[in-house]
Image 1 (cartoon, rainbow, N blue to C red):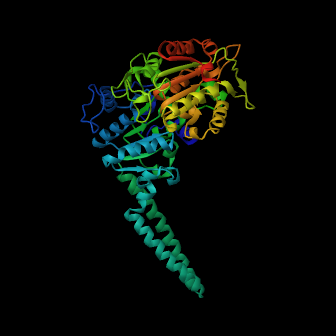
Image 2 (cartoon, rainbow, N blue to C red):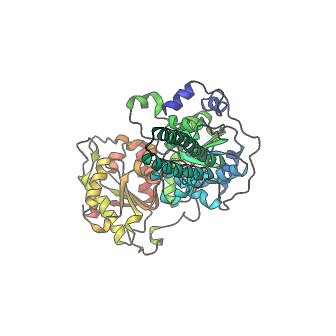
Image 3 (cartoon, rainbow, N blue to C red):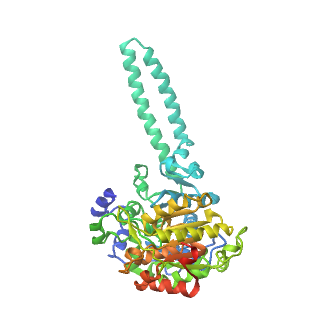
Length: 495
């Protein structure tokens, strides 16, 4: 990251990104072809908003932002853009902040027989994509075969060296070994170069893009997935290698965690995606509007609150319920799409742990009790997630889960740790319950957006409605649940 900053501060006038840099800093306006690009999709199931976004992305000449709210098929759209650009003859660098996000793209590209290479340490890659790893492809190359022959030759010479008695003979053998070692290194480097040169798509994490193996390679297009979760400086490592870029993400979900308060204050908490969205708005950005994850009741709150009511539920998910899953019985627990369990008046005050994180034992017990009812109704434990904004509450919930073997496959995590994931049923433990009506970072719209939108068929909110309603944003969330949800008091769970 530091190297990328130094390179950037020198002003990379002659580099591949020379014309892109001023656009990304707002010194030059972005440009696009006058007409949106027509294309014949590889994926026949793309919806109207995905097609429109792809068309605009293909027409962009420097920067394009693909805004993908929860469940709208952002990666599906990214994969189609990659395929269309390969068809046009572009060489592409596709990146994301995490290994898993990069591997996800590799997997999705597999069926299309694209010439691709995944750069990165094999130990960090998913087993099913190891064949596309740089190391594996290098081993299959001609130059690697020659390097192998040289190594065999060196082995034979080393054997002779051990047996040699004469000084001159030893000197000659050592000289020959040095020459061969040099040649072997050269062949290995050539083998790596061959693979990268022949690939239409090179995939790596953002920091992996700094690999020396990519030093002499420039790209027609740099694509960054999950860009709203990446530090801006990490994005620049990849961006300096290309003349055009497409960033995909959602700045209304959680940004990366910034550890330094000082950095946050000076604006480094803002991602490149968010900065460009503020700078150019709809000039370079298109939002996907059809989502394939949530029942429309779960979706509507998020759509109204954060996405100008533009999101629609695809027919395949708009009305799906927990009891539609095979083996799940229809019951008072599995029937509602939204559940609000109110702990107000139940004497369940929050506490702090040693690390000053907040927890609430009574509320944790209620969340576990609801999960238990779902399991008893036939919902598979692995289809249930319990999420909470506070790390101390996660620890407490996991201790409670461990007391019942039937619940061990229920996933319990912080909201931040669950971003990008989904479950059939999600139980959100809000934790805060105090006489001062303090809500802390619950008031972060992005965190609550992520929390609610992890759920596919049921979202259960466990909270002290009196405490959380002191915040205007959370009050609207509670009111939405009060209007559309099955409203229960925590006392009904016998906690």
